[in-house]
Length: 324
Ligand SMILES: CCCCCCCCC/C=C\C=C\C(=O)SCCNC(=O)CCNC(=O)[C@H](O)C(C)(C)COP(=O)(O)OP(=O)(O)OC[C@H]1O[C@@H](n2cnc3c(N)ncnc32)[C@H](O)[C@@H]1OP(=O)(O)O
Ligand SMILES: NC(=O)C1=CN([C@@H]2O[C@H](COP(=O)(O)OP(=O)(O)OC[C@H]3O[C@@H](n4cnc5c(N)ncnc54)[C@H](OP(=O)(O)O)[C@@H]3O)[C@@H](O)[C@H]2O)C=CC1
Image 1 (tube, rainbow, N blue to C red):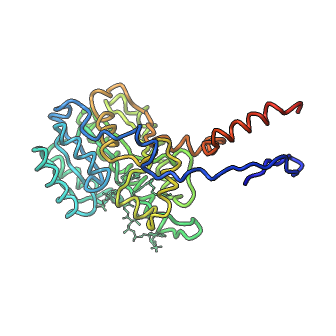
Image 2: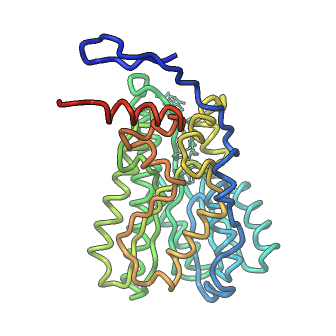
């Protein structure tokens, strides 16, 4: 039972506002928004192209490597865990028939990044496509965060992206070779978010870096774009951001398309942005979140819970109001 209150605090009328039916994450709306997961671009779109993907051994990085490789790219994937990278590289190249090299690299260390790029150049040359996808994150009340906790996330996300971009950018400029740079950020790079403050700050920095370089390095043939994904299930993200699984349902409930994203959907967008089909696209920030961001932002969006009968009553009340 809910009451409509006058500003004086007096109850105007009481009516039954039943709780909305419990909507499971995969219920109603996702029927309209089924994912398509096959490679979207024409076969061979990345033939004779080399793609460098940080964090390409797992999660979204793995999915992007898979689609680029399916479309003909040779790929180099780099992160800290060589065994994980090698397993992914083997699986993808045996499926696609295209080379995938695994290189160990901690992006927090600029010397390690330079060594990794040396190795890539020796193996396959300078890349045409660079995807800065490596990240670190965990939920933590900010008052519990230590300086080292702050550093561990911001070093991977902001400094790591900067070191990779500087190292490759300078070498590409020297070689007079054009390239597409893509950064994977997050929807809260724009809004900020409590409980993931180092990640929010670092991702916002990455966006500023990429928008700035889109303006500065276009003259060298370099494009810079950004994808802000909404929630897409990966072990890396969900184990650190919702370790008990408690928040998943309420998160899905606020996504207008009624489901999580799929890694392959994100990978298709990344492939498009990195391809020649997007050669006029630079400095773009693409939110890819099933509508979650706008759903959280709109003052009145909770009114989705109001039933048709309740709307009839509310309309009558509003129309019945005389004067101000
Ligand atoms: C509302 C529901 C949400 C559900 C899901 C939502 C999905 C949407 C997601 C949106 C955005 C996602 C963004 C992402 O980036 S997801 C990607 C996540 N993937 C990873 O994080 C992979 C890599 N991560 C790591 O390797 C570690 O987690 C790392 C801590 C970031 C770095 O590892 P390492 O360098 O080994 O660091 P240490 O373990 O030595 O720790 C360094 C420092 O940090 C402190 N620390 C670590 N974890 C926590 C924690 N949970 N809480 C507080 N502090 C932590 C640790 O204690 C160390 O500090 P100190 O030396 O002072 O003790
Ligand atoms: N999944 C989601 O819902 C969302 C993800 N994102 C973003 O998508 C990207 C991929 O995340 P996701 O796939 O979910 O999570 P993962 O944890 O699977 O991916 C993170 C990758 O970063 C690599 N990495 C971490 N630290 C370093 C380092 N110091 N040097 C090099 N590589 C490193 C990891 O490999 P290793 O451990 O071998 O170093 C891992 O492969 C990230 O940028 C994340 O912020 C954004 C919004 C939502």
